Length: 327
Image (tube, rainbow, N blue to C red; front, side, top):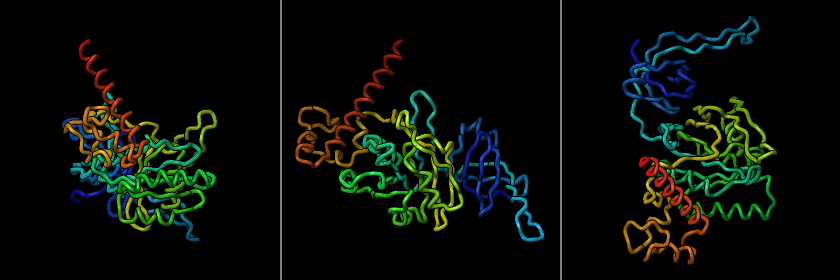
């Protein structure tokens, strides 16, 4: 049998689950790919593999009840095809982590309450999506937990992102509010759902992918943070068509590979500002148009504050790295 083509659906240690024509295979990565090409697999990678063990069908008893589950086939990954996109989590002084590859869109899922969302975190993830040329979609979940007046504030925040051209959704994965509309947005796409632990990712995906029975967890009462229920990214088929990646909960998202001057490319409202200098950082430079744009409402004030915070963070990180090199 020649090589088969499949998609990596899960990576656990040195083993990967690869799906090919609806059949799962448990595969090793050929050593030369890992050592010579320094290649690390990610969920969503398209690979070529050789079968070393054929899958076995499950068995039923005389009454038609399944008594043994089907066994995965076995194989060895011989080649990894080029990625058309990848969502990366950049780690300072460490190897970058590819969360998932070959994505069409990333759903940034945050909870409106328990734990409450921070717009700066949403903005940081949007910058990462813009950096990697992946469409960002913003979802405000757990809307059933907030009072009407607070729901209005959430809707105003959602309107900020909608006005910038990002698709936005208000939902409650537990009650089903807005889930049908949200489900249509996943159809026939390869999508990832990212966000803080406890935001409701697994609950939402259990509705989109019945039968997966992903573990869900409560929010810690001691620190108000969600507990991690997903420990490794996993690609799952959606019955209506397409795939979705469930990812471990994120409490931070490094962007250390960006130069401070590149941050504005992740803020659409700042790209076309008519500043005096071409390389303006939109802080307090002479002739900068940012302050006037915020004053007039052209640029949302909270978005601008998150931009300034990220630029300052990168400037300080760059200074710290330079100091370390001098020692």
